[in-house]
Length: 486
Image (cartoon, rainbow, N blue to C red; front, side):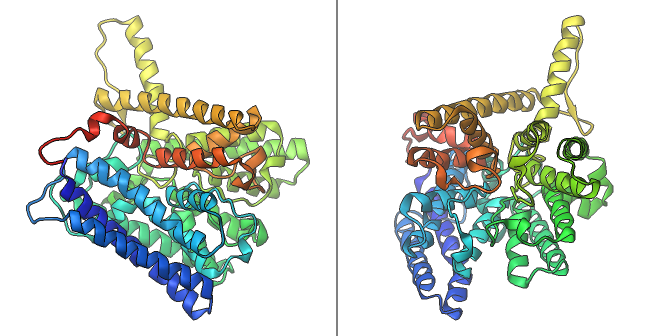
């Protein structure tokens, strides 16, 4: 591993983090939020100091190429470093203690959207903006956005893109890695702009519209009010939010191709069609259950079902009504969509629809081969045959998610949380949803978790955002084995 390249690029990332803190600093200064301005000024200074120290021992040369280990190290360490620097405004401003600042920052950048702040409405606007920005930068990916802005560093940049992109397949839409990252970032910015415009037309003020647009397209779910969407009582806003949450659950790579080849690409995509079918069925079941069991009128039931299925399946976690009071059948379907997540290459968390499709087709293929031992066949997705390592990778990821869910639930039960709440928190954390049922339900926060569970939640959110194996690879002693470059 080439330490010089890793430290050099980490230095650029911390500089990027410091630059990202300038808008909330300016907002705090102009709004006379003196504590917030001082906190952001200190944060920017720490980012610059970190950059200086990293560049003392590292740097980049014109012919540098990244290997797979450098790509993994830059992605994993970059996320960890940015999340740590991102907690400084919360802690330095006196808004949260150190542990809660860790949780808020890791939750923001991972797109989980789980907050430990019981009353966000008392926070200054600069801190609210930083929370939303952390969601937005973490949604598409800190390093992907960084790659879109920074120069190309050889073909090894593909290893970074693979380490941070979600889902079983990592397709390239353009020959050059930087062009690929720029195209994804351009679509991301465009969708955020459209979303903010839609929210503004629905009656939100510009500050609230921009904040909610960033957290919607990033499927992070941070809001500027305690009750998020329920505070507005705006029917049109709820439908608008549901639409953009569903859009954000689609593959951004698919949208890049659609911009070049037409919208037909979207409707021919097997994964996205399957995702739409799942949320349609889930919404019908939940709406029917609300009508029959709670006596809710048809329009309200349909709106609530569409909104919350879109919110939890996209792992955004916005709340329009207290779904923790819904009948058991509705809760089961909402938790299933929560665990499932959106499409590969989206900003959504969860298992991903493509992995479910691959696992189902893999099981069918195994059954057919038992009946016909000489059968030669391959698993396909959207008309393309997939290599065995992609299919087995989906199975391995599913196994890892289940193991981590059980492990995190066991830790929380050891920490004093009952079984049902432990399972709910575990699923919502690993799936990067945020709200769930019970102790961290629709109207609750992670502030109720004991300290050990909060600390472990940060680790599991980190694992989940980088899809587990990137972080596990870094934890392997062999990964850090010394070579002539280390």
